[in-house]
Length: 77
Length: 77
DNA sequence: ATGTGACTTCGAGTCCGTA
DNA sequence: ATACGGACTCGAAGTCACA
Image 1 (tube, each protein chain N blue to C red):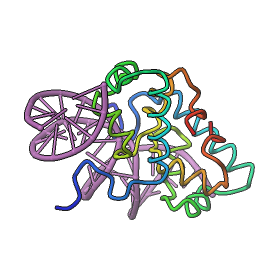
Image 2: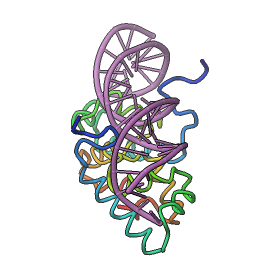
Image 3: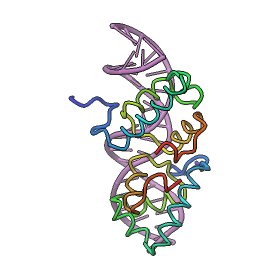
Image 4: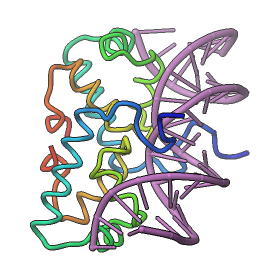
């Protein structure tokens, strides 16, 4: 199998953009992935996967991350 | 079983808000769910489920709907 | 034209590790 | 601290028939 189970077949442009944005903001606040994950109540590895655009994140988790960063959802786009 | 399979256990506030927004915009343009579904390349019933907040929509589908409505994603929030 | 129940598939999301 | 792998669960995706 050439495609890993947990990886999007084609990393969608939008997921890449979103992941970059999250990483950028996270780093600008000197947060580790682990800390952000804890604040957003998602799994440790999940933040990494989102930042690398390996997951097609759902609306509820988008909101969790936005809340953890004290942002409006629209500010992530 | 008291909880329907395809229904979120608790309709999240954010999904409700999102669904209302989609419906509002769709109606303001006199589009049927069927037409919008076709334009966004998702199933007819799916739009209905999103509008009723019965699905925790993923980012890729959020983008599809935004594109179909000629909107930026942020305009849906 | 829309709502809903039932259904299958596969990917979102978690957890354990290793480097 | 982060990336990444394997393995797992259950819920999102997607469809259909019918009200």
